[in-house]
Image (cartoon, rainbow, N blue to C red; front, side, top):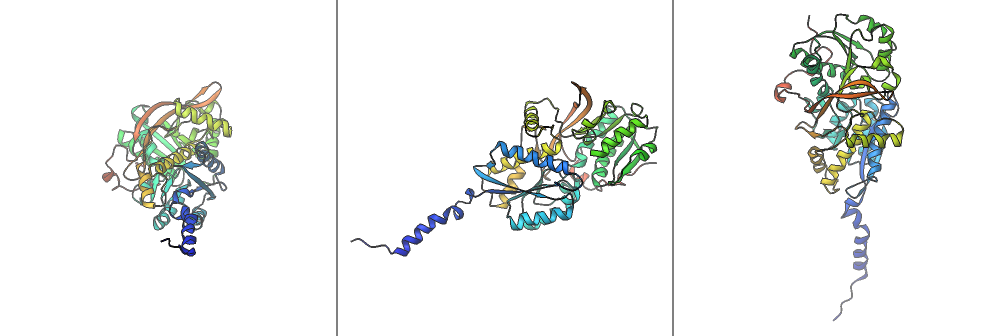
Length: 412
C-alpha cells in the first residue's frame, strides 16, 4: 500500500537543503580577517606598506585559505589607541570577524589586548613590538608574528662590545616605549659584557630639529647608538654630517635607522653605519629575492620590514587555516592553530613561536654599503633563533622591571 507524504513535509525537507549550506557547512562562508593600519595620522607610509604586504600575499593565494574565500576588512586606526579601539569594536561586533590583525603602535596594542581577551577574538599582531605584550602583561588571545623591541637589541649590545670592540657608547632615541625598550635591551647586554652607556639623549615625537641633541653628544664616546626612524633618521644623518661629525664617532642603530624608507634620501654619510633587525630586504636568499622582486613589480619599491611582517603574517594565518581545514568558527581552535604554526622558510628566515606567544627568529647585523650605485644594508653577521629572553631564563627575566626611560639606569 502506498502512503502519500503530506505536502508540508516535502516543503520542509526541501527547505533544509536550501538553508543547509549556511547552517551545516559554515566552511563555505568567507573567513573574515580584520586588519588595522595607520593609513592616516603621523605614519601613513607605514600603514601603506603594511596593507601592501598583506595584499601581496592574499593576491598570491587568490584571497582563499583552505578553500574558503577571505573577506579582508581594512580599517584605519589613525595611529592612535582611541581610533584603534573604535575600529576594532566595529570589526568584532558589527563585521563579526574571525581573526583580528595588523596595527603598529605599542599603546594601541596594550589598549586592544584586554578587549580581544574579553571578546575571545584570536588576534595576530604583525608589527606591534612592545615587550610586555608577550611578557608580564601577556593576554591569552594574542599571538605576535612580528617581533618585540628588545629582541633585536639584546644580541646587538653584546655584539657591539665583543665583536665591534666598543667600550663607551652614547645613545639617542625616540622618547617613548619603543625607544626605551630597544635601548634597555642594548644597555643590559652591552654593560653585562663589560661596556658602559655614558649618555642618554631623548628626542620628543614633535621634534623639528635634531641639531641641539647632536651638539650635546659626548665626544668621549666610541660610538653613538641611534633609535631613530623615518624623517628623524634622515634628519639626524644629514645634520650629523653638517656638524662635521661623520667619520669621527661611528654610528650604529636599530634597523629603522638605515631602512629602505631612509636610505634613498641619504648619500655617503650613511656608508659604514651598522644596524640590527630581524629582516633585511637585501638578503641573498631565494625566497627573499623572490618576495622583493614581486613587491617591486607590484608597488615599484623595495619592501620595508612593515611590508614583510604583514606578508609573512598573512602566510602565518594561512598556515593556521590550512591546519584547521578552514574550520574557523571555533575561536579556541583558531588561537591554538595560530600558536602552533612553524614556518621553515619566509623572507626573513625560519620562525616559530615561544610559550609566551612571541616569535623565535634570526637577528641580522647589517652594514650600509654602496652596491651598483645604490645604498644597501649588507648582512655581516646572523644570530640564529633569537628568543625575546635572549640567553636568560624566562622566570628570572620576568622578575626584573620592564625596560623604561630610567631602567636600566645610567650609571655614574
